[in-house]
Length: 288
Image (cartoon, rainbow, N blue to C red; front, side, top):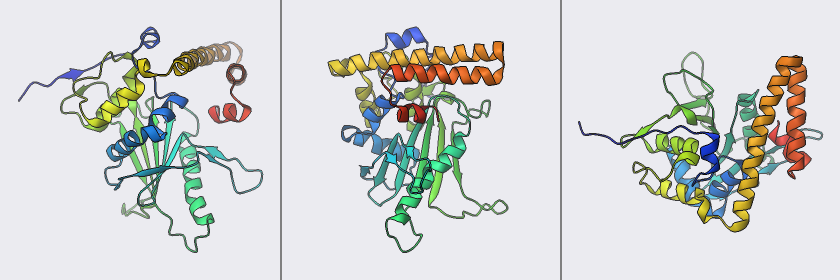
């Protein structure tokens, strides 16, 4: 058996501050790398790795904001939405930390991609497939034998027979991939890179494929325009401040009671985001 190279890193706040590569899981930077015309090839290659069964040769980006067609009801803002060459719809969401009702939120989000197809004048319910993909920078199922991909469909509970192939959910737990070798799959390498991007000094030799060339190029801070470098520094400061505010809110929760602590945590985060220029709608979406 041949020897295999192995890459394994751990991250820290100090390393992030002096990183060669940006944390592209942050909202604007994820959309910059994957959700723009310049990132289309990277998005296509990523979708192919996550959903090899889907025949994707091209994509068209859609409007990320989706008002609810029913009065006084809550709309949504997707991180990325795109449509493939065969009409299939893809919703890609990044989740940086645990959140209550996240699975239910996935169901809610996917319903918009379904109802919009039917509401556009179709005379049947033969809508094109909708794929919800979540990139989670935390472990939703800790201690589950290292499994990092979870796929869900609508199935018959007894027989396992598929009810429909028009809706599916894929959840990737990025931190579960703790190291990679030459023999790791591209999907494992992608999850590892996204989780550890800020502590990698160079593109690992195991990541020679085109998808990683594009990924690391999009994340290299030295290639950012001057105004982008300023924005990234501001975003990183905001993100670190939010972490600190959350930690403070939790401490307050222990001191003053659970309900009061959570309310204080939310208030402080809202205040910080608004000071950084986020609109009320953006704050509501971030804290939803």
